[in-house]
Image (cartoon, rainbow, N blue to C red; front, side):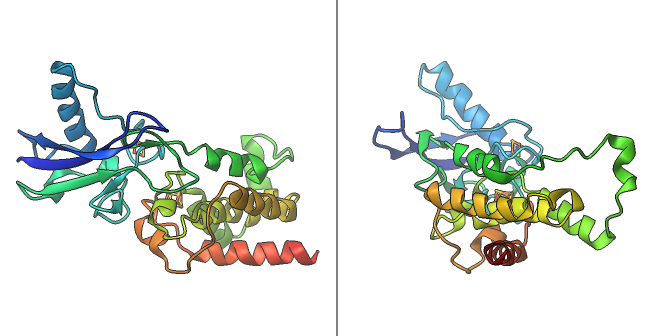
Length: 246
Ligand code: SF4
Ligand code: FES
């Protein structure tokens, strides 16, 4: 396959950026999207050019390091899929694809397709933890948790912090990410001690980082590679109002 690429190149945070045309040749349909970019980078390096910067780590869809817009869609056109798990067989020979970094004020571009997502770390630091001693592994079954609650908490904990929800939201809201983290702990007995302070601190930090408010349009849920549902945002809002009344 041949794939025509228009890739956002930006040398640094304060430098101007622009879309640059590249042509990826000899692309196997079995390649992952990032492997295709690796091949493009090898040819750039062999010519002495600066390779395209993009984030990745596990390349198995579990770490949350990767992520950029493919044709305007966060992580590309496949639902429930990170860009590292997207494969070239999804595209047509000769297709033109535009690659851009997440666009959000709270995620400044570091270089090319790499953005600074440390705002997420600061939201977690604000309250995404429990301070109580939950014992060792052998104590896990001593605290009874209803199966439905355990399952819902586990589904919320599946968020990998990739930032696609922010990139897809016209308000650049991180409500889905924050609500997944709030839900995960608010549903479990271990999370009850800081239940009220947690949600208030995390929501306040979310706003202070420059993320917008929830648009209620559900674009975040549509692009989330872990298919985190927006019912988490409703739960976060309930948790917040509950904390305000206590
Ligand atoms: S909620 Fe989904 S899209 Fe948002 S950071 Fe978590 S995994 Fe990524
Ligand atoms: S590189 Fe880890 S989720 Fe894509």
